[in-house]
Length: 110
Image 1 (cartoon, rainbow, N blue to C red):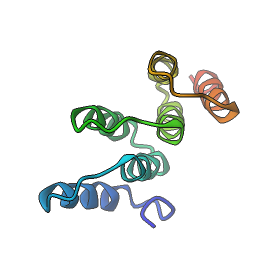
Image 2 (cartoon, rainbow, N blue to C red):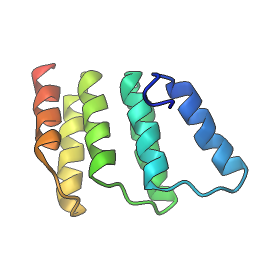
Image 3 (cartoon, rainbow, N blue to C red):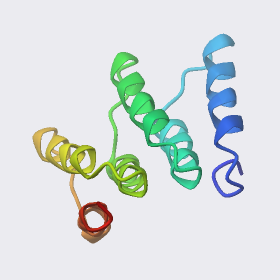
């Protein structure tokens, strides 16, 4: 709901509440929060969530990475978008046409 309503602040707040109540977030939770950041054009928060995933041993998947690449592109961060594409290859996360389209769009907007 937060993702579709452009309520990125609420998504991050709910994620923090999960941590505070010892509810362990999973890849779906993080992906949803990153997608909410994408709708709000908050690439810094999205990258922070990706870093947080590593600290809690949650591996990003295709949806997570696509959202992160897209939000970086919307924020004019083409270098970050391409770094995420490389990270996907290094961590054996499969890419698809959406992945490459988002990366190309990121380069195009810069």
